[in-house]
Image 1 (cartoon, helix red, strand yellow):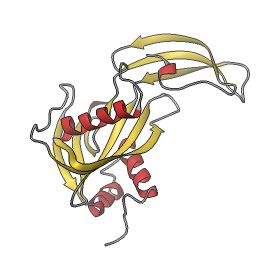
Image 2: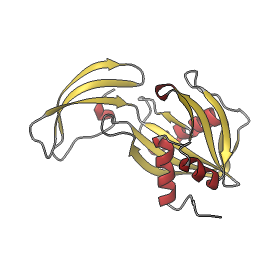
Image 3: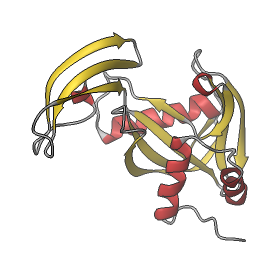
Amino acid sequence: MTSSHAISESDGWETVSSETHFRNDHLAVATEKIRTPARPVARPWTVVHRKRAVVIGAMTAEGKFILIRQERLPIRAAIWEVPAGQIDETTELESSAIEAVALRELREETGYELDERGELIALGDYFTSPGFTDERGYFFLARPVRLSAEGHAPDESESILDCQAFTAAELRAMIDRNEIRDANTLGLCARLLARGLLSFAAQ
């Protein structure tokens, strides 16, 4: 797992050296000396390289959004969030392959699937926390979704406690009450609002 998998360098950006301190199947921690357009003298920076990810907003025919409640060990809490998952490094980074990962993660984590007449809308990408990691997420909106006959099948490492459908008003209230506080869900809501695919206007 290297930075070249997630980012490309040009216009004065250059990795002069890289020393990996830790690596597993999900991330690698490295100290890198990086030359930037504004700083021609390379300086060291600790970087966490992570696989790319998909983040899925799933909307039912009634306009409700599917959220899962999942235990997150680093923050010692269970929180409501949209389904998401990492893209395996062997996956071709073409739009069709990334879309297939998004639909698979949706079904595995929620038990929902895209209706045969539905659409999967790509909403661009974002960086989860660019101060320390090159992790990049791809936003999608799947609509409408329906319950899958196969049901959900979360990964063994996941602890998904609940899955429910929420109206836009309920979603807005959960954000206001700080019940939704992960970057994936907040970022996806911002992108949906900006694209006119979600409205928090009073009904």
